[in-house]
Length: 353
Image 1 (cartoon, rainbow, N blue to C red):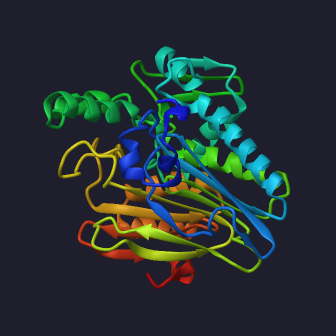
Image 2: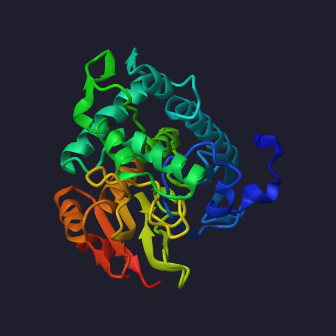
């Protein structure tokens, strides 16, 4: 679907669940925080013009809101940020056969790795290490197996099918050097879906800051990056969606600078019971069952994105422990039974929902 065909009212409403049905070209993971308070478009607050624009990107709606003394500057910087995002998306779209990641997955080797991809590969290796293997970009064969099997048969794959795919899963099977990446096992494929979306949002945020903008917010379907609050001494209010749907938000965070992302089982799933979904625990070859959502705050969306996926696959106490070992990382975990686990720093951010 071309951007020009989208109705204006669709661009003005961030409704990830409905819009994914229309704009499902990319699937960089699911994140469910929602922006619950921002100035109305075009208004002037504290001498700052508010410019807000929304475009369909990465299988969701991406909104960039900038507050600046110059309306023209805010509009120009917003446009440049979207251009930067589109440039970066082209590198990581595994659904496009002519992107670097698609060529790697097809041939099992890639020379002349783009700098952006090199960064994410090394960051993926870092998160794989700190999580003791829980974050693993080689799970794509398993993910595709579940998606295709449910689509064709309506039931989960057999144990034999799962074990066959698990044989080619493992970060240790990726061989990287300065100029090349290759797979050591035939049938391997990688997905950067659990980290690329955050990186792309950070690229836009870096550009916005480089142009001297002090107050901005990017909301990419729930992967959120805040810059300087919504004006002098005013914080953004970020609501964390209730995964059970009993109320609108389970938490409301006060945010000036940094990022937040959520991974959950409730939107991108393959079966009606939501037992099999887009997050795979490679140790069992299936989706983890204990969690319904894992939210993370971090300095960058890339970190929040990768860690929310990672913590979703661990036990609650393991998730809290891992977050506590990492600088500037906080988390909130919600289990199937409705129990909530929070790191100490998370409690300091939250307001009453």
